[in-house]
Length: 180
Image 1 (cartoon, rainbow, N blue to C red):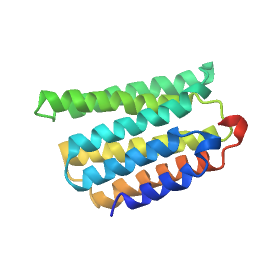
Image 2 (image 1 turned 135 degrees about the horizontal axis):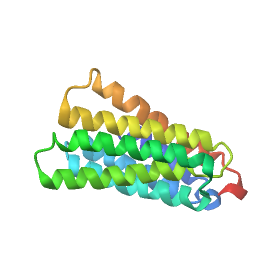
Image 3 (image 1 turned 180 degrees about the vertical axis):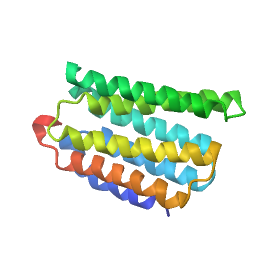
Image 4 (image 1 turned 90 degrees about the vertical axis):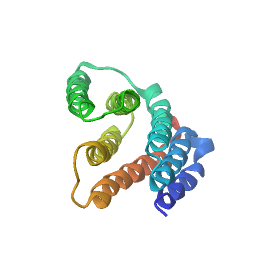
C-alpha cells in the first residue's frame, strides 16, 4: 500500500518520458520498489533500491549542473552536515557491513543533494527543496532505525518523503523541452 503513491507518480511522469527524459520516472519506479521493500522490513534492499533511485535523479540533474561561487558554500555546509551526521550514526551501528552500506548510501544521498544545488534549471530552488525533504526523511529513517524512536515516525518520515517525490515529479512533468 505504501508504494502506490510513488508508483502512480512514476506512471504519470512516464507520460512525459519521451519528451522530458526517463531518469525521473525510473527513479520514482525504483523508489516505489524501495517503499515495498521497506514495508516488508527488508532494510538493506530498501536502501539499495533507494540508492539506485537517487542515481537516476543524479543522472537527470547532473548534466544541468554548473559549479558557481555562490553554490560552493551550500555544498560545503551539506558536506560538513553529512559527515557529522554519519559520524554520529556510525557509532550506533553494530555491524561493519551496515556501517559500509549506510555510508555508501549517505554518499549517494549527498551526491543527489549536491546535483540539485548546482543545477542551472528554471525553478532549481524547488529541486533543492525536494532534495532537502528527501534528506530529512532519510535522516529520520536512520535515526528511528539506529538511534531512538521518532515520535509519529510514519507521518514524520512519509510526509517529507512524499512531498519530495511529488515535487520531483511535478518539476519533471512541467519541464520545458529546452530544460529536459
